[in-house]
Image (cartoon, rainbow, N blue to C red; front, side):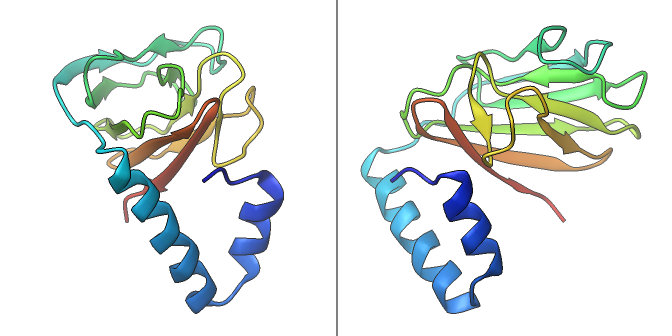
Length: 142
């Protein structure tokens, strides 16, 4: 199941029941792919510049990534290429400063423009799922 930007925007404006139905379909699709969670990398430093090009590349063989140093707001990291594998990546920002998370290449996260990325505030975790080639969806912790 691929979610386009238009679909995500409609979903954000739809009822809770409609959102639950889409989530159920998405979860069933992901369960069929048996997502893999393995390995942890800690002590990461987000790269300065706040751009996708400057971002620290997160390991494709690890699933949990703990960023402990974000010197300036929007310092950045990026996910491995999305292939549609159903892989899950957890990006934990243990610093007090917000970081910017990007996809690799032309990959999008939650249909946000490639060059924009999404924020992970200090003390938060963003769970990302590789749902289709070039497509990540995510949930930010409370």
